Image (cartoon, rainbow, N blue to C red):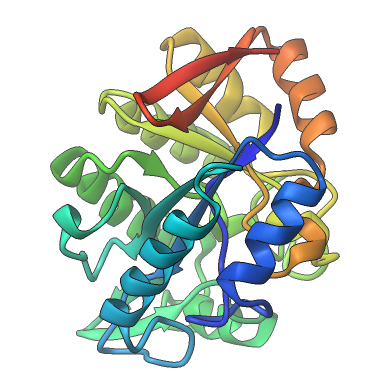
Length: 266
């Protein structure tokens, strides 16, 4: 049975209501669904949740309504620069969507043009940009220890369609491998995320294959995620991601159920 815990709704930048998501999840046979609304980011309110209390109340009511048919979890995707109240949620996805330069926040994943602005404020140096992004993100991971780490190499989102700064850059690859190795020191679950593929931005998921090999060598935990923003993508590319994981040497992924996180063999 499949699950998905990286799911966005109309409470943030998703297209469907939580109830519509649950109905679709049951229709396609998911055994559990987790909601992960974007935590409030005061420096950028365009995409995040504005009413977290109402979100929690809504998911709680849906647990009562559908909880005998499917496991439902209320999570949050917090940004490394804006943590949520952890006790309010069943789990936390920790992600990084920005770089900070001279006190200003620049989104790395809201469009190819805005990403180019990130590069511009990094002196048009992709290694300087990557160092800023990964050093901040890994520092957050080691201090915060979120339950799940979201799309660790999000910085490469536009590499296949536009910028082509990272995938063939030996210096970048060494830098990324250094930071994923350091992040693996935390007791967290790393997600393998198909969101950019469903949006037509990539042909491969996060995490990159070289990062997966490092995580395997560190005995790190992996979770499948579709980073869904619509009911059409709740289980997008899961079979393909399992195939990639098996080729790397993983034999299980982690899922959240009523008794906590547990293995599912693949």
